[in-house]
Length: 310
Image 1: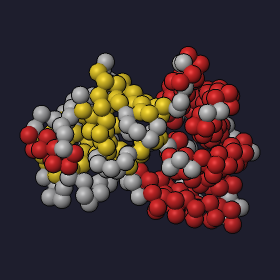
Image 2: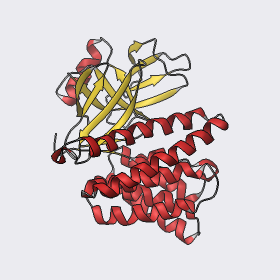
Image 3: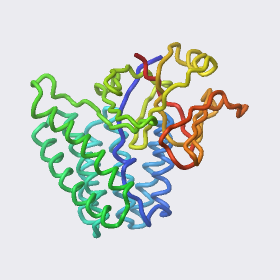
């Protein structure tokens, strides 16, 4: 497989709330979906269109959301200067947004700016932004708990784990080890805790139940977001054969994200309301192998993104 880039997308953690149906925000969602599918040109086109739409409509929240997605896209591609300019603009926009729920989005914008500083080697600037982002996430988490929005509160906690990792790396590591390591907590379908990390623009490893697993993307681009899950590969020869045909390797776990499968996905993962998980062949819809006793509730489909190999 050719050159691979791994990066995590803070824009996927934004709170859209009542603005989810705004024209600019709908375009951002389409751009984010394109990015997660590896269609980078489409992602940039949607994000730019969203930014223009928001500015023409004087929709400041839409402008901040679109600018953040563009910043994520540019630093993932190594275009640091426009990423930095958009990151600063995003922070300014969200700082002016009223309401306690917007402290959540301000925290994401500040975290993103810290990541850009980290990428450029401005470690003091990165630390300042990380500390500020964590304070804002504390405020946001408290707000979500009082509103009984536990999914949002849990997201804040996961983002704080990411910040703690990044901060610890800058403070505790030797100078040559302070370069940015992208790190994203991952929800594991079997209930164990998983953390993902990878050197920027190269590769990744998955730490799961004390085991370190190598991550092999199924496509040229691997883009991880806050809704990434890990599923154990069932002990079924058909599943392993499909994986080997596409990847050329076999593994123990599949990294996946919610969403409809792409036409060239050999299979997808479906979870029903009782938490029973099926690996389903495309395009026939045949159930290849069921996996039960997983701790996910709610009907959902998941696209396979990468294989975790011992």
